[in-house]
Image (cartoon, rainbow, N blue to C red; front, side):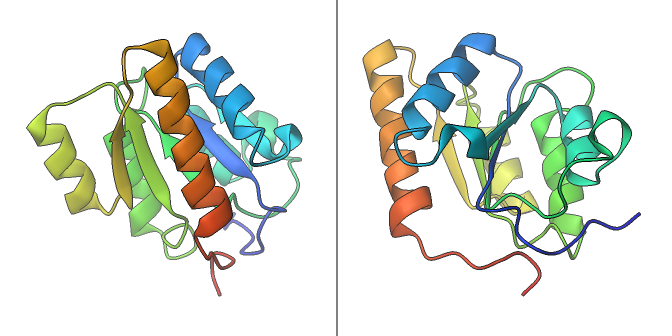
Length: 152
């Protein structure tokens, strides 16, 4: 089943296996985006199910998120594998993907950009800095950046 190409009401999809990072991100990003518009999945396999409306997400409202925040190091399907799928699919390719990860490894940065990420952001280790980074991400991607519906 191919995903519907209409936009799912301005939804952000966060793909991250860290419960603490997810909780902080949802709290901070909610000040830029309504909290109910931030969907969270915990690995690349679950993200695939979410985006293609399979399994437990089969009855999810049609449409795509307007932004995907993607961690790299996750169980099952990692962020780079998912990024390859996203950017190889004509319906999912237009969705901006921000790699939001702890990895500072040059090979991860290079691979992410080679596979088509729109931005690569390293999660700061200090709580206040992570919070500030998320605020700036939200301000740019969810307020300042002009976006279009995927598939248009």
